[in-house]
Structure formats: C-alpha cells, structure tokens
Image (cartoon, rainbow, N blue to C red; front, side, top):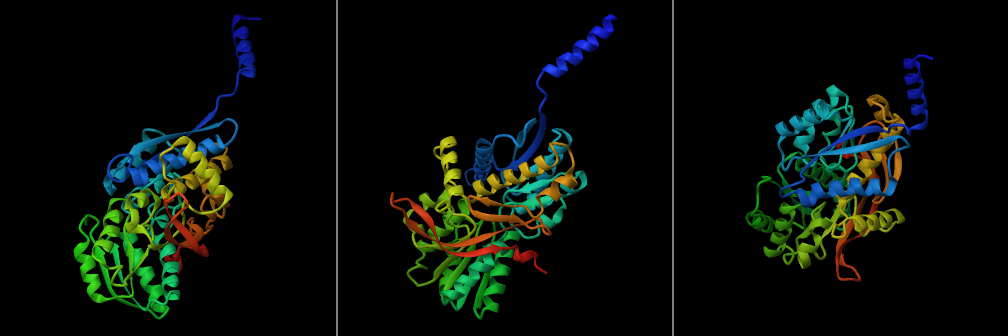
Length: 389
C-alpha cells in the first residue's frame, strides 16, 4: 500500500467516524434595530425570531439557520435595496425577511425577484407589496384585511357617519379606501377623508377640524409607535370622546405602547389580527417563552408576525433540505396552514398573502390592573380584500 493510499484510506475512515457538517442556511433580516421604531418593530422582530427558534430548535437534523440582522431605521427605499443587494451578493443569504415600511419592501422586491430570493414580510402592510415579487410571502396583515371587517363592525354598532384620518402613505391609503368602500356600501356616509403626513407630530388641528364635522365615529390608521401615542392622547385632549365621536381604529392600541398610554386608551375599540390577551394554548406557550427569554418584552403584533414568519422560513428550508431551490421553497409555503399564537392562519396559495381572523377588541384593565385589548368579536378567515379582483 502506498503512502498516498494510506492517507486516502485514513481520510475515508475519518469521514465515516466524524459527525457530518451541518448545512448552514443564511437569512437576512432588515428592520429598524435602532432609532424611534426599534421598540415597536425592530426588537419585536428579533424577539419573535428568537422565541420561535428557542421553542422549535433547528429546522431539521443537519440544518442550521444563521440570521444576519441589518438596521434600517426609517422609510428609505434606496438604502433598503442596497441592504438587500449586500445581503444577497456579499453575505450569501438564501432568504430575506423583515421590512417594516411598505416603500422599503417594494424597493427590495427587484432583488428578491431577480436573484430568486424567497422573502418573508414581517410587517409592510399595503396590499401591493406581495405582488411585487413572485418570491414574496407575508405573515403580518394588510390594511384592507383589517379595515373591511372594522367597517362592518362600525355599521353593526349603528354608526351612520364617519371621518377617516390616516397617515399619507400606501398602507394609510389602503386603510382609508377599503374602510370607506365597505362603510358606504353598507349604507354609511364618509363626511371627510383626511391624509396626514408621516412626519406629523401635532394632531390637534386635525382633531379640532374633525370635531366640527360632528361624525358618529372617527376611523384612524397610523403606523404604530410614536405617531399613535401622540394621536390617541390628542383624541382625548381635544375632547372628541366627550363630544360622542367614537374611536374606530386598527393597530393604535398595540401592546408596545398600551401601558404608556394609560387611561387615555381605556374604552378604545380597534379591529386587528392579534391581542396579547388572546386565549389559546399556543398564545400561552408563546408568551411564556417570550417572557423567559425577554422578561421586559410585551407580546405584540410585530413579535407574532416575526414568530410566524420564522415558521414560514422553516417550512421552506425543510422542504428544500436546506439547499438553494427558491421555486420549491415558495411552492412549499403556498396553501400552508398552522395554528399561530394569534389563531388559525393560512398562506393563500394564489396570492402568497396571509388569511387570518380579525378581532374587534376593547381596551380594558385585567385582574392585575394592566391594560389589555380584550377580544369580543371575531371575523374569521379574512383575506386581503385589496387583492380581490
């Protein structure tokens, strides 16, 4: 036996006895991990991902997932595209995820499409987002999805007239358009539609103008975080509640801001896809693990969207054995259903968007005196109405 043969045989023997190298799948996550939206979105994204991994381990034997985090504090389409390009070309990610703001998600769609990178949207909620790339999937919601049942509920409450006030960007326009369509088709009247710049910090003049219109209700959508905190307080400070103008919202009382809003939030009603007060074994398990990992974290919609987004990533990774096969990955997630902490969800096989329950909630205090969004009415299996033709 030659020396070279001995080396080869030894190498074969070593390969047979050594543990197999794990396949590493890289996922790039883009979101605001610093700045004013980090508490509402960036950290909840990270917490949702890490809670899912802690509860479920790795996708399969021999496959490990590495998450690469990239900070993008605000709507900045150019930077969003650049970060997506860098993650794909330099870091070699097989998947992308995250995206708070619709303009950023739309800007990165070209990278996803051209490079065939399956991408899970954790937030960006304009209906148009998912159609921008054949490799986009969403696990958050759309504004059309929550606004239509919210309008139906407003009609059920007997409201005849409303003013709509939304942030002036794609999700706000979606919320306004779909709420108004459902409300007017049901016999209601929209007295005025107001679009407020995203940069608005003083909502007093808008609310004073609304009060003069004397509607039965005010429908509102703003991206949660600092804008919603300011708006809810201005609603109370300007006396709209005392004037009998009901608050009809979507995400304005989400959990990250809820305790800091204090009694200003009591009694406010919203229609949305997740409440930390949702009663189910899945939500209890999710909240327990989140609290174990992050004792000060508040379970909120962004956390759950990232948690379920990680589930979607795992489904695609398992289906492809950790290999790069984007078409097989997307095919595997289409039509998939599972029980989320929010309730039952499905990824629509045609649109790749989420189908889920929308809950009408009222802010109350629980037995410990903490504010909660108490669900009291459910609209089951709501699609993205904005995608309906």
